[in-house]
Image (cartoon, rainbow, N blue to C red; front, side, top):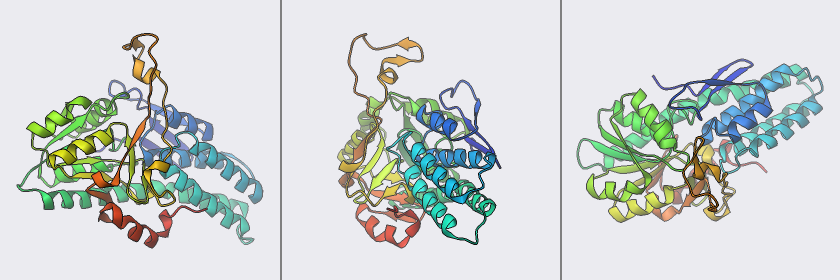
Length: 359
């Protein structure tokens, strides 16, 4: 059974505190937007899909507590709070697109004179709650399409996969994106082994991906980030599968720092490099990855492990949380609608208006 990172029942939201994993399993109550912003910013919840879902659900929890009876005020509160939630971690596009769609919905409900304040609130909250269901459905479709693409290109009956950072149940509503592809390969009995990087400096691979792989008894080995070249040279890797926090219109992909160098090494060794992401991670308003805003994190994430300092006092640090992998290094982008080359995105996205950013 997959791990549950988000627990929600109408008006009640809890998230698994990922800062404590893998040594402690504890859920944190999220009682409103301020709590939602904090758990996202502090990375108690992380992963672009999960950030969007938790942020929006925190707004739903707050709305269900409020007794606002004026639709105009409700609309204004919604827009302000959604924009505030987007600021918690700006690189991940999913929450921005979700906010745009929800603001558009609030505007529509507010303008409809036949919609009462109570109906406004109910329809708005249901729209947010449906995000949980859709995310799991999309992840399973990503897993299926990714599994098929990798097996179609594999020379023998079993595959060896490398992944980076955490893209499983802990980063989504459930099942996962890149880790969903790995789950699907394992379910098909075609997965020989998975290699996961530690993912410095925050160690999401060592703490979270390894935790999920052990939990589900998937054959796996942890490596440090600097071992990727040696791994590809010696272990005959079939494919690399990673997630994405934002994909530009040309296919340039922002993902956890270290992804870019893995893509370069994969290209050198002739290993296919796949990005697994829902269509909501694709931002057609950005022509290339150069326009993706890259979040920079505190020095302490590099200089300390817990309370123990590991870096020389006084050294300066540069700690970007993401890097951008250029489109020419990407074999395919695995979505819930299929697997596409980066140059096919412009033909795919306009057909699905739900994922086109609204102005």
